[in-house]
Image 1 (cartoon, one colour):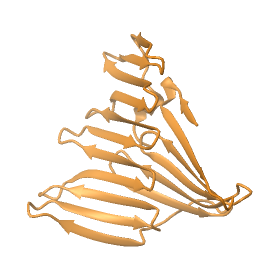
Image 2 (cartoon, helix red, strand yellow):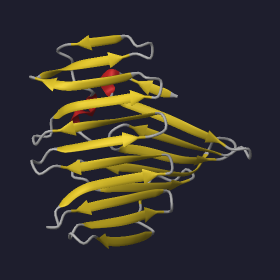
Image 3 (cartoon, helix red, strand yellow):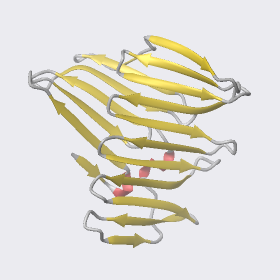
Image 4 (cartoon, helix red, strand yellow):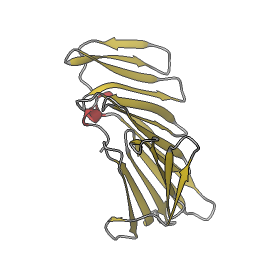
Length: 202
């Protein structure tokens, strides 16, 4: 199921059903949020993980077992890698389900955050001018959004496997939106409001 709402960003839900009646349900809320739920035969939640990438690159992972409320969890394993040029990558694994990597340049400045699960990934890059770009990809769609140094969304795009897509670019105080349908029909909207993801990853 793919729900595409131009003004409210993109939400994608993927469910994997198994022969034993259990299933896994993954939901991506485009920029910076995802949920992975392991469901019993009656569709009740056995275990659920939530992932949020904050605008500053910090990644929060939560876990809930059964009907318990979500609890923030720490990594189950960590590793630090350095390349010959002085850049550093810190790797964090959460229960073997979510993998997070933070990248630092040769001066120790935080530059990138990567979140991977078995079905997709999200990448955040912080720019020297204080802007940022967050991209994502999963089996059903991929896209990205970028914010300027003032935290204002200036670009948003998403493309789907059926050939449809949407792009929004900041023009003045509003923006220009280009929508391509699965039938190839293109619609351009001037003075279009930005998607509600304009506040950034949350």
